[in-house]
Length: 216
Ligand code: SF4
Image (cartoon, rainbow, N blue to C red; front, side, top):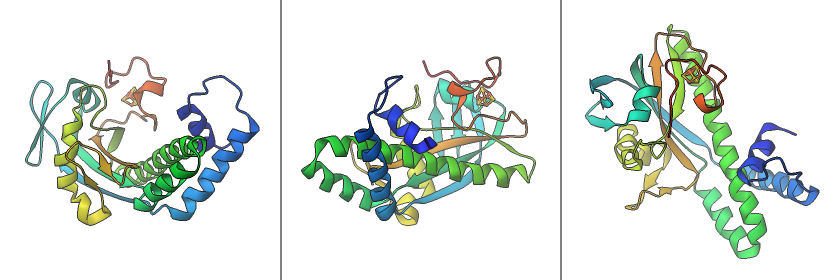
């Protein structure tokens, strides 16, 4: 079973329960359908990171406050702002499916989330390789809405990345992204190598890492 299928099953909340063959078939159909309509786009820009006070940062003209983010960015002097989307056609596919079968749309939603995560991981890997050539190392990505990092920060991050123009990503007044299968994140850049886990501190084995973030 490939990783994206495993992730989809995890998003569907199966836990350790066995997955039936009908669901597995629906997952592979979902990926086939998603592959045919997705238009994955991403953008990133690197900014200097200024720590103005404990748990307070300034990036460009934006001021951020978050204890969880602060732990994640400890020892970082720059930060990558990152945005990615699967594109508007994925939303149209989800709407069409919702009219046909609720069971299928639930699986499709989970598969789209897994696909977005996989795409973000690939983009992050490219950023990692490019920065390591300069002797710089990245920390796991951290998105608004995670821990105490307020979802409202999505708006200035998207503006700094010019997401609307560059990748067609906008946000409603209620902080919903459009297209919905999209993400923004910060990725700390440090001169200290930690070989961070791609999936973040929560699944990383380095329990005594001083940069380890907590989100509770
Ligand atoms: S706990 Fe792991 S993923 Fe988190 S900062 Fe440390 S090395 Fe990186």
